[in-house]
Structures are given as structure tokens and as C-alpha cells.
Image (cartoon, rainbow, N blue to C red; front, side):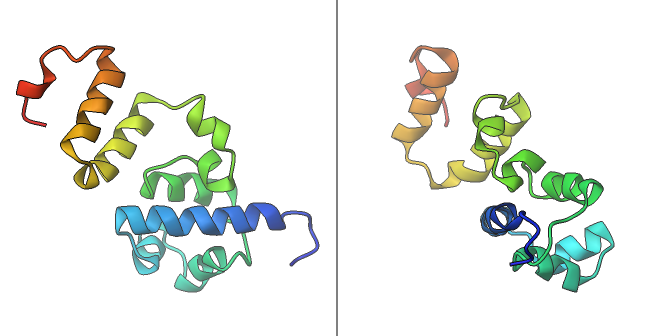
Length: 122
């Protein structure tokens, strides 16, 4: 695309940015306003034309409730080094779509046991 060797990162970034925007309900206009950048700059990120500079990337990841590493396609950074905050954000963004059975599986994974979780309001 630009011949600078960063195309794979731009395309992965685009894909993950779209996914995070969809799951958080944040629009390009919201991002532009919060970051104090033009909507055109946001659309350049969304079209894989450009990658944000490091400071913008960090703030964008925070807005999208994820990490810069995730947005750039470094999956291991999320999977192997996930913080409690990251895990909580993932759960909060997804739990409304989960069945009671799925919620129980999460509780079991966290606690290591079922310990009377069926009586709790999940």
C-alpha cells in the first residue's frame, strides 16, 4: 500500500479498530472529538491509510477499552499479559450477550469452583 513495510499492521489495526468501535459503540466522530484530531485522520486509520502516532495510539486504545498492542495485532500481549482491567473490560463489553451457562463458566474459571454460584444473581 505505502511500500513502507507497515501494511500488515495497518490492516490488522483497521480490523481491530472497527471491532472495538462496534463493541464499545464509539463512532469516528466521537474519537475525533475526544482526541482533538480531524475526522479525516480517524478515517485514515479506519481505511488502513495511516497508523496513529504513539501518543494518539495510546489514547485511542484507552477510548476503545483495549491496549495499543491489541490494536496493532500483537495478540499474545492481550492473551498472555492481560491485566485484570483488560479482562474486566472484555467481560463488561460481552456479558449482555452471554447465556446464564456462559456466565457460570466465567465464574468457575475465575474462582476455580462452582461454589454455590447458581444462587447468585448473575
